[in-house]
Image (cartoon, rainbow, N blue to C red; front, side):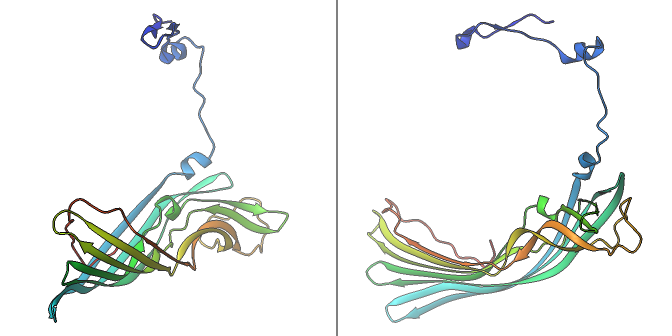
Length: 257
């Protein structure tokens, strides 16, 4: 036992203090190995290699008494993703590496029309991607033979998962009052072309170690609870932010979010 710890500064009495290493050395506590395969099976590693190519053209054009500025561009992004880990099945662990290779084409357009009277209209349109969570891409799978259904069932991550993709549109109307402030009305429309869902799907366990107790002739096509890409939905909103005291800077760029 150690000297008690005073918590008088919190208005409390002394607290019992001890060093757990002394309890282990004295035989009061014992370290027991955890032999469950579920622990190492949760470990995983994700590798992503991205290659981006892009073209961009700037816009600066007088239209009557107004000035149109902005840019238009296109990104081509190649993604090579791999997930490695240990797959648990019937008392054994098997090192596994799986992944995918795909392209995304991401066009974008940003426009700003500055009109007389300190009115500004800003518009943007872009194809955007949001990469899935790393743990959703893990290769780790726990599975076994289901005697009730006579198939192989399991669950885990999905190393073939694609990003969340959307077509996004933004429109803003702004009125500036010199350098003292401005008011604005904003709106957006986002069309989600794909999303990430957790769902029970057919899964082919070919290439995975056959679980112990699986009868001969059992098909490799079974069932798994994994995140998948599914269809998205559309959303839209508008708002009027409070007037600002100073005029902010605005920068348009070709890219994805």
